[in-house]
Amino acid sequence: MIIKNFTKVDIENKQDISSKFININNNQLNIDCKILKDNFFLDSFNFFPLTTEGYIFRGAFSWGDNKKYDFYLSKKFAKDFNSKKSEFKNYSNITILGSSADDNYYRNIITFLPRVFFIKSKRINIAIHRNSSNRFRILVSEILQKLNIEVKKYVYLDNEFYKFSESKIPQFFNEALGIQILNKLLSSKKEENKNLKIYISRQNSIYRNLINESDLVGKLREQGFRIIDTKNMPIIEQINFFSSARVIISPTSSVLSNLIFCKKGTEVIEIAPIYKTKNENLFRDRYFRISKVLNLNHNFLVADSIENNKIDIN
Image (tube, rainbow, N blue to C red; front, top):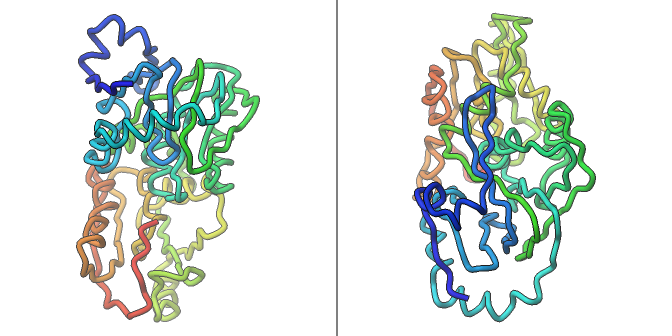
């Protein structure tokens, strides 16, 4: 098998390629989503489809570091793949939503979840990664239920390559568009408390918690802040808090992915550690980028780190 990449322009203009895709428009957003409907192979790390003819579509199915997809065009990948493809487990008639292999909340919400709103079939079998949290699975189920989509079966994928026959996988959206989709379709429209101020506690977390949080919490309560611990909170409840809040204070953590549900102008104060390594710097502006897309007022308060206050990228 010779692997060949096709661009978004090819998907639009080449008849033999465009015939492999269906175009779904979300009427509420007037946004189109290309959905590959074909026989294809798929790895459960990147959820990057490779058709049985050897076609890949980087423009439609890449996310994160784009360089990782160079590997799919390498001779080594082709040799290894061709020697093992007959051994891959085969599923038929599956809609692949997917989820982060390491259950990264940021990635699950911003990269994978927006595509659920472009599923139009009323009865589906849906595939996600086995490592996905129960909270994420519940959220997906709740959304599908509201969309009047019946799930006949969930397929949980392990860290492997699979073959899918007569199956579908929606394209991935860029980060900014994914944020806008979720903000418009999932943010609570309730105005129960226009002056809600919340502090996100990490006292029950191993990483990036504040050693003097009890002192801070006391001061914040005096200022009318509500103290929130999201560790065991359903995602829908988290969405409601972030949608309603006028002010949010939180140490840096994946819970700030929920900024995608905030209203324009929400005041955000992120208590950030001192980043020292190149790897840590990759995540410095992750949540600030969300605020920039949604016009939130995002500020940083840098706190001294202690030796065991390790960086947790989830």
